Structures are given as structure tokens and as C-alpha cells.
Length: 341
Ligand code: KG4
Ligand code: ZN
Image (cartoon, rainbow, N blue to C red; front, side, top):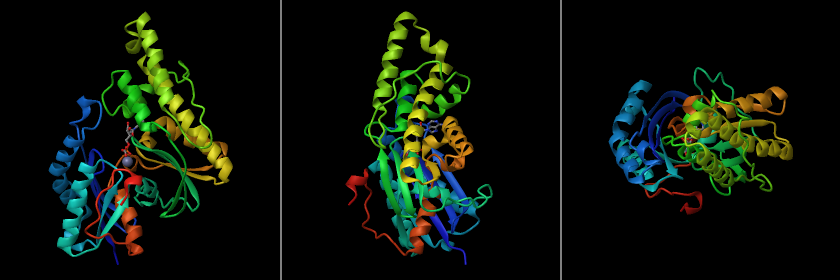
């Protein structure tokens, strides 16, 4: 008996819908929003409006590509938070009315848990490789940087977190300082491929325990460039590849140092990476390198599951559906975990 779950994701600037049969992905459709590129960041009001325009076509497409009819769906899973409230409201409202209209249960999903649970999605490429409990996950996105210990699908403990900027934010801010458009992370990755990661050194943060800090790195990058630009106005243009490779090396080095510390402290040797920054080629290579050295077994997501997508919402929804953990129509979005009501 198939169990068809429709996932809906609208927490930030991607409108996405996916259909899974259990953990097997049948479709995953995402509409990116280009309207923010010139503003240096996501403009919440524009994001919300774009979600309203995109949501029906995206869902229609996802159901069509899955080769089913909407009446075949067993449940609708939606991102309840964290994220931008105006954006979340679009997905939440649509999910509620769609589930109500079809007379099927509604499931709410936490966006950060879903990034981690994306490792359980089965595709023709995944070959059934899923982490076993307990495992650690480095969750790195534009809004979060966490080391999470996972003992069950919904039994998760954050054992390390950033005390200021997220890793994705560090990439985006460094890119902005160099005059690159938003989101700068993928561009830093691309340009850095041609550069020397050891060309320039930046002070590494010294934070106790398993926590992270990236604001000092950003400031040191800013001051370094300010000084060099005084001597040579073309400094950024002339050294762009080396600058991208070097700042990337500093961010990835910081991420990996604490992660290895967490592996040693917990003794857990299965380690996943999730979230938008897990698309970064240097981070993916660092994971493979540690696996080759025998430090841990690495779980690296397929590219389509790194940045925001609805397949991860649907798989998290499927696990809740099995537990019959349904949401009711009064479930309202939350912007931050601590604002959850
Ligand atoms: O998970 P995500 O799509 O959205 C949030 O929940 O925040 O992550 C977006 C973040 C952005 O900061 C973006 O610059 C970063 O992920 N990112 C990258 C790469 N691809 C996306 N950062 C570095 N290298 C990449 N290849
Ligand atoms: Zn995300």
C-alpha cells in the first residue's frame, strides 16, 4: 500500500512542493525567487508575495510529476517554522485548506529537523545508504549553525550552536564585502575553486565547548580588505579567487574543528551534514577527507536536498504520519524555535 505525502516548504525564499511514497521521492519541485538578488538579502514582503504567486503552480507540478492525482494523497506536511512569518503563512494556510478540502490529515514539520531527516529520503541515487542512530549532524544554513546529536527521528539534541552569525551568513556577508550579489555562498564556492585557500590567513575564533562564532571572522575580513584597498583600489578584483578560497577555508576549518571535537567527546562515528552550506564543495571534500582518514563515516546529502526543498518536509511528515502525530487547523507559524507556541 503506497502512502503518498505532499510536502510544502515556504520558510524563506524558496517555494517548494514534493510528493513522496513513504520515504521514496516521486517529485521535488522548487521555484527560486530572483527578486532579492539586488537587495543584498531576502526582503520578507517580496518573499511572501512571490510565495503567493508560486505556490499553486509548484504544487500542481509536484503532483503531476509524481504521476498521481491529488485525491490519492494520504497527508499534507508543511513547514511550521522557523522562518519568515509572512512566508510561512502562505505555505501553512495553503496546507491547511488543501488538507481540509481533501479530508486528509495535516502534519506540521520543523524546518531544521527536516534538513537532518533529508538523509532518509530514498532516490535512485541514494542506494539505501541511511545513517543509523545515534549519529551527529552538522546543520549549516543561512540562519542556523548547529551540531546535533540524533537518537531517533524526532529525538534530537543540539550540542553546539553559533553564538552570533550562521555559517551561511558568514559566506553571504564575506561575499557582500567583496561586492558579490546575494546569496554569495555559492559564488564564493565557485570563484574559490580557482584560488589558493592559504593565500590569506584570518583569525580563527576561540570559543569554548562545541559552540561557534563567525562575527569576528567577518570583522577581520572587513578590516583586512579595508587596509589593502587603501594601498590598491583594485585589490579585490585582482585577488578575488584567492580571497574566496581563503575565507572559505577559514569558515570550513572552524566548522570541522568543532565537529571533530564533538566526535571525540561523544564517541559517535557516523556524521552527517545538512542545510544550504552542505552544498559547499570544500565542506563536502572535508567530510570525505575525514572519512578517508577513518575519523568517521560521512553522510553527505544529494545536492537537491542541501538547500531548502519540500522533499525533506515530506519525509519528516511521513515519519510523523506513521506516529499519527497530526496537526490541527489552529497551528500557527513560528519564526524562531523559542517563539514556538
Ligand atoms: O538551508 P538554506 O537553503 O536556507 C536556510 O534555511 O537558510 O541555506 C541557504 C544558505 C545561504 O547562506 C547560502 O549562501 C548558503 O546556504 N549556500 C552556500 C552554498 N550554497 C548555498 N554556502 C557556501 N557554498 C555553497 N555552495
Ligand atoms: Zn533551510
